[in-house]
Image (tube, rainbow, N blue to C red; front, side):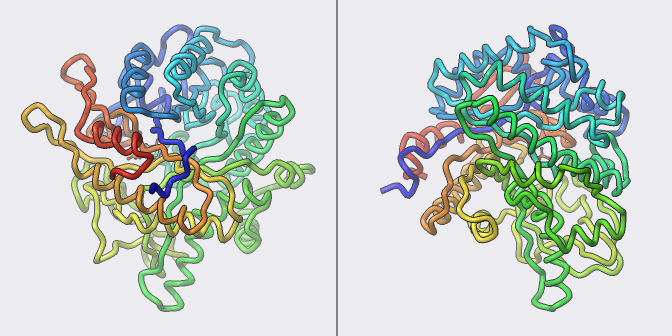
Length: 467
Ligand code: BGP
């Protein structure tokens, strides 16, 4: 018998900027990514989401493929500037119509939508008006946007999440500079991150005030950290890394407060986050209904006296990246016994069981969805077929890891592999493929089912028994 509950949801995920294209279609406003990706040297070989995989124009064909795959749920994001071109105020009805039609098409095929409100594409107008996430004004703006979405789509959508992976858009936006707005300013970054937590809390409050029939959650990267050795220094370094990358991001939305030790460290070093009257209560009173975990890899951590900064492998040439270090705190190091992808991400399914266990231990047995998980690879085409056996192996092992967590009692309710279809990888172009569906960029973006498509079809049909 399957270890997965009968009502377990099998799906897949995407995000607006990575699939839609239509970047100027029908009144859409510019996003921060529209600008950033057009700047020289920001992305792999200058790739951008102007056309992406043209889901904006081909969503019916794509939903038909989702139905054929047997998907019971689909996680996608709304492009804020598509429906509010200036970020606030005037609504773009054509943008609303696109998402409304997409939702109807999904429901027609019995596919339950899960909406992400913010998957990184900020209206550029808000970046220019007040610096985007740096300003408290963003909290009101985000709440207005969220309310608009609830009002227009809340009659048909009952699974929502506010944000996707704060650690990435804040970390890369304000600490490493690899994402817009390309700053290296920890003080601004920590305060911007605080505004994200406030915006989340306000949007959760509005969701409940409007009486939307459903659940609202928050999606985070789940990257468990393990010390490279048993030495007290490495274990302490690991504790700090786990504190910054995990507890800092999860505590405010699941406990309504920051981890105390780190909060004191940040306020001493940078004078932030600055709280305004009411912030604490807002966070405390608006805990999310569920947590979404995006799991790809774990990280090994070591004590660090020398390494500062990092280099990302965006080419898929193994070993071309250099791991992240914060001098005096910790560095991420390679596991000598680890198996790595071409983009230097460790493949470690056990980490997913561990990660879920760590969440349960710290926050209790909260409803959990695995909102992303997948293998980025250059898939070979052999005799006309896209043979992605490594992806099948990766997903199988991770599904088993989720099964193990469920057997240990965790309340995991659904699984959304990344990604339904091959799409734009933010910094890595189109050659880092994740999908069950291949997109032929040399042939008018024609869709083609991969080997993994038939495999995942059987997994879903057997509720996770036939792996
Ligand atoms: C997550 C993002 C996704 C997706 C995925 C794969 O961080 O939420 O949008 O891109 O990672 O990452 P990458 O495209 O860098 O391989």
